[in-house]
Length: 298
Image 1 (cartoon, rainbow, N blue to C red):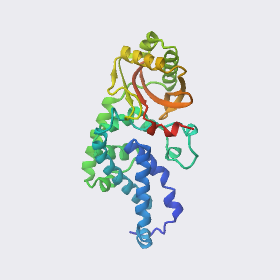
Image 2: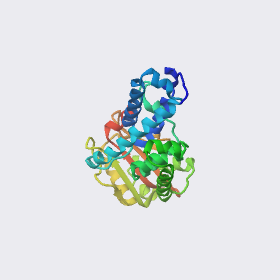
Image 3: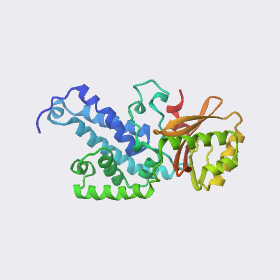
Image 4: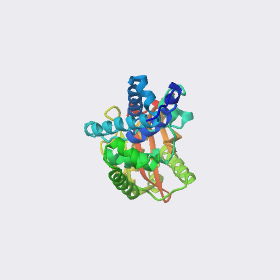
């Protein structure tokens, strides 16, 4: 390898990209931050002479971050089996809505695009760790399979097969394309019907086969299993509103798409993401675990 003579500023400048990679790989802000911090800790633990031998510190940091994430994904399956109820990825606010000091939190550096939509992240959860790493790095971040092979310690051909398998999962789960304005209008109507506890209106807005998944993590009340069917979901939503007089619903961007935030007495209780197809809601992901709602608390 040639020498790079890398400055601290150059390696620090990689953090934004690494956070974006790690969040998509892990679906957790805290775990993404920890993975990136571990990669930097390993970089700074290298002797200066070894750092100077590394031609591309960014590639080195990506490789280490990818391997750390791969290890986390492997252990996460066992942890999530012990998780109380359904596990959902951390919901992301729009950067302007981030509740902490700008520039100090990972979400301040996250790019909100289709690859962080709740629907997309939920599909990623169905993949094996190796599939997820190969797919995210290649299809989302355009890393060549030769580099991914170094992370997964497999051949480029094997990595290509992993990405292809993951791609099939994404295609099978993808809902018909819906314009952003239509999604926003449907979510707005859901908000109004929910506020009015209008079950009939909610049923009209929900696909008959809609599914709602809630994540309370044992720290907040949530349906332990997905609620299936538009009519049952409508009744469930109306019951929630009835139990919390003064519940405030706010239209907010959730992972870059129209969503709702439920507040009560100023406290954020729920962040809900929606999938909309043909003018109706097909999926609702409601995150209620307070540990995942910290970015939403200003």
